[in-house]
Image (tube, rainbow, N blue to C red; front, side, top):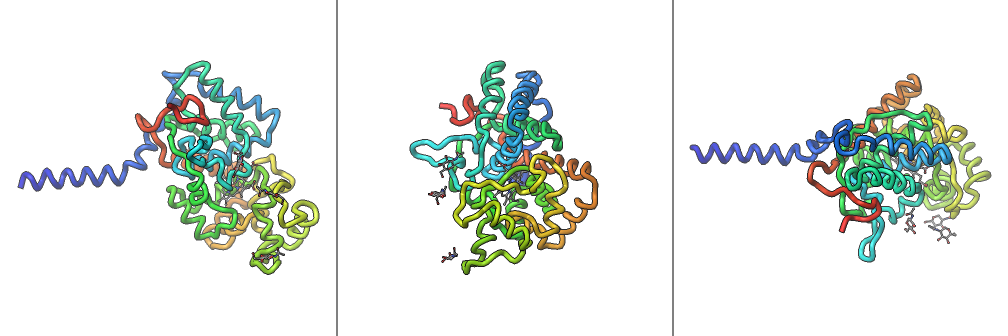
Length: 330
Ligand code: HEM
Ligand SMILES: *[C@@H]1O[C@H](CO)[C@@H](O)[C@H](O)[C@H]1NC(C)=O
Ligand SMILES: *[C@@H]1O[C@H](CO)[C@@H](O)[C@H](O)[C@H]1NC(C)=O
Ligand SMILES: *[C@@H]1O[C@H](CO)[C@@H](O)[C@H](O)[C@H]1NC(C)=O
């Protein structure tokens, strides 16, 4: 009897640990985690980033995308910042990295913080804070960034290929990849709204213009006038891999609702953008956003970003606090 009872209690405890350990880590993140160990960390990061973004505002988009890539591959653990070594190809050297830029901002923020309190603030937290600060500096949404993330020691190019949604993802693939990270269908729509800022290379969507099904055709779901315009003025050849195109033409630097308005006009740039109009749930979220106020979108975006920033984080004694964001500690 007694043994059976102890056994079942242990089993229940085991089950509980297995079931909640992943999500529970996120609970350890908290507002102002560095209050006692590096009081000025957040303001040092803010000041550093404001200098950079005021000179180069387009880097705000780059920082937002980098944070997204970090969180979707493994966890929000700074793995996207690690560089390849002689026996490992890191995430940043995988194909989807093509437009990752602004690694020097992270290095600048890290150096500034290390100078004040060495070995205390993780690169994963710095990236999360930098993305938030950069976006808010260009008058985008502001979201809370609870801290306490620890840095991972692993970064694999192969995982960037399987965990990051490709620009040709279908709606079912997108839903699956987001739910795999604990994000809802609404989060998917709202976070895709990040494409209201920033740029893409032609190579991420030129198949839609030149060779959609392999017979030299165009994607019929893309507005034909827009497609013609892109071919004449931007992506003049199917192999152009250098020209950059704004995803939200005319307001690539402004966080607004026009990305969603364009989706409804069949002018989403990637197949993954267009895919959001192909299911009734996602389409109705888009309609709600377009009919609502900018303030509502910014609040929704902030909410989903805070959720994204918690994906599987390492906390407590897991991982490490990297000394240099591009290198694991030795
Ligand atoms: C839903 C699935 C998503 C797909 C398939 C996708 C795909 C892409 C692609 C292909 C590019 C252009 C890369 C290039 O050719 O240079 C891009 C850019 C960008 N993405 Fe996404 N993305 C997705 C979701 C997100 C999310 C969730 C965020 C952030 C919350 C985000 C933020 C950005 C930003 C800001 C840029 C512009 C980067 C720059 O200007 O340097 N994306 N995305
Ligand atoms: C992206 O990866 C390629 C190799 O696939 C590499 O040559 C390039 O330097 C990488 N870009 C960045 C920004 O790390
Ligand atoms: C389109 O793609 C097919 C299959 O990949 C290829 O054989 C063909 O040469 C391409 N056509 C053009 C016009 O690029
Ligand atoms: C970009 O295109 C040029 C010319 O077509 C080619 O030589 C180069 O390898 C391409 N780069 C990438 C990263 O695909």
